Length: 416
Image (cartoon, rainbow, N blue to C red; front, top):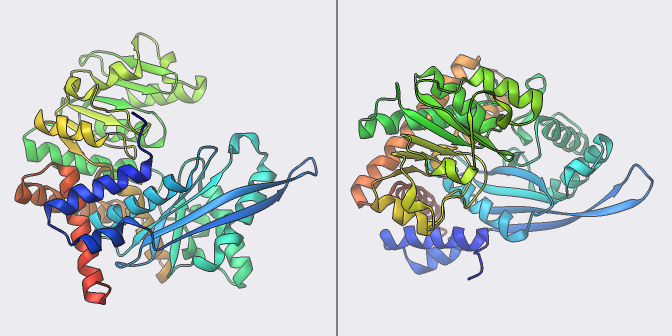
């Protein structure tokens, strides 16, 4: 059986949720497809003088609740279907978080590791100039994603400002703070995930102090999640990156400062001393209270779902659990905190950054964190209550809650 592409999975998730609320088929058909997809060619003069043409995409799924919002990724495997799926997921993520945004997503088919800094800048400016006519602070607000970062956003913002003749700081988010970025943006996804885990633990009667944790993936999201859970008293006993995983015991938990030091110095967590080496696959099946898949998609499947022992699975990554695995985990009493809820901290602080850009007034890190906590706690409670009401798992509940919000906005606007 061939693996489903991301867009097919996104449509299946929509249909599953639509069934629960008996949503009109015509509305489902409308929500399945993005409002608009732009495909662009980006000619870039390479350092050796040759010309290379890259392909870029921007998918705008639905803007009933507000401007489109979503990242831009640079990756050799970017596809039209992937970008369409991600834009749909952003619609639901923004709706779950209660943000006045719809969903968008962009991508360029490129291996950025093979480009020089100058080539990356020319590619970034070329891409943004090519999509400039369909974006803007009131239309569509991009942000970073895979292999893009604050520097990419700075180039995007500068190119857009150059085209329009004045500074437009609010056209992208996750910029460097010196040019309109928000405090707290770097750690926002992990901080938001922590707030959701904290609420989930309370809801199921799990004491976060002394709770055991395994984290798959030790990039920005995984590493800062380690830090925040450790500060709350949880014991992180296993972490991993693309090179492998490490395991220790609850009486000797992994310390964030030590693991991040080794990761930065040697390039991998597997070089931490005095620990047991295991595989990424074994990490997922450890007997822990909280499992945080913060690496790749489709890592929890119908094959390994029966072996997941965690009480809470908090999705730091996008799409780490397949629909078939969801059913198994729910039946086994595992509380899955779905990606569109658990990792919505990033887009939530992006929203706060956009608000700050609009008013030209900037908050302190503490103010940003407090506002983020309000957003995430409210989002968790809305999804939790929806799950109880419909007697469904948290992913279906998140979709039901999000779809209801989007459909309500569409009705009021006379679209349906």
